[in-house]
Length: 494
Image (cartoon, rainbow, N blue to C red; front, side, top):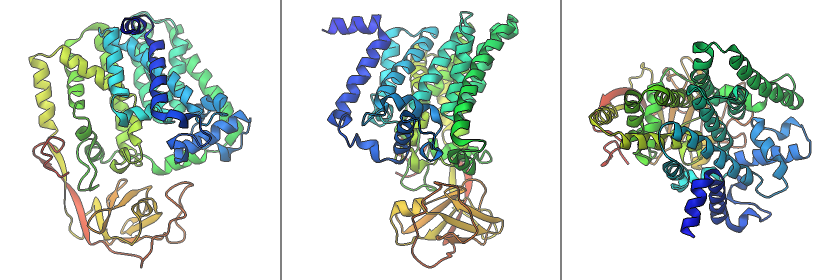
């Protein structure tokens, strides 16, 4: 039996991975996969939107009220919308396709089939917190498959073996249609892939065919979009635009997500504390860029720069905060990056030498940089404010449509700042788009005349108590240095 399994994985790795994730799904979901009520995720907000849209597509219903998110993921589930869990077969297929692309990238970097299988499983299914994100309906499952297939195609073109430029363009454009933030990936991958055939070999037809594949996907999506929404932005696009990006404090945003959210988000902890092995992945990427040559080096740089561009957008996105990483499963945004991190860790271990040790030591030293909260004077800009908490549940405070007015205007929660109740009976309000400017007043109940886009916060929540309230404390940021917060004994708090 063991010999047969090994032979199957050696001869038919993609098919074997599809079978494995199907068994994994059946094992963890069990009979709820077929029950009318569906699995545990059926009552969740995002998943209800996916299901509603898939069922609408199955019925050829183009009512915009039934289509909230970007359309491709829901459309992919439409043929199975009669099932209680229609996205399970789609997720299984996407898992296998993501592995297919990942495996091709691994082979380009000199990593064999067996190691590719183990690395992919270790960074997808081994950790249940990540593994369940490949089972639950998330659009990042489809985008991960598209991104890894595009990276595999890009590797072929870098090696001079590309044959399907239209497919590269179509994959990158479709990934951006599934998740608009993936446009950052395409903006990096396309130049790397097309440099050799278009710039060095002057094969302009390759560029035209790649553009044709991308434009074909864009045209098809545009026709479907116009049929549903007409000549206007969808409500989801309007909400995303209202959140927007804030690049002005990118270092702080990266710090609270990766290293240490407290004291800004007390009780939370960063990704590095949960996944400390990621530091080896970054070291492997940097050391590999010096050690490799030719196509492997170009492919490695492409992977690293695509990941950097993507993470830069995510760190700047106002709706991505430490409280949502694990509580609301927003860690799924990074799903496609974890197999890449596993691959880089493998490269670090395989090529470990003095240079690798120096890079790792430098990263460990660099991770000692920290943003501390220090009291802010009354006239000084403040990154965070503390208020006396109202008598309300944590989720009500977190999602309430609230406003803080200051000397420069008003900021809305959760669009411009985020608020959360903390253990000492206070509410922390953390600014994302601009610092608080002084003379702040917190309106737990939004005053008339202040607009919120659809689905921003919870319209049905009213915080009790007397309003407005003034802050009991104000905090500014200060960049300091010390023992890394993400390493034991966790000197910045637990």
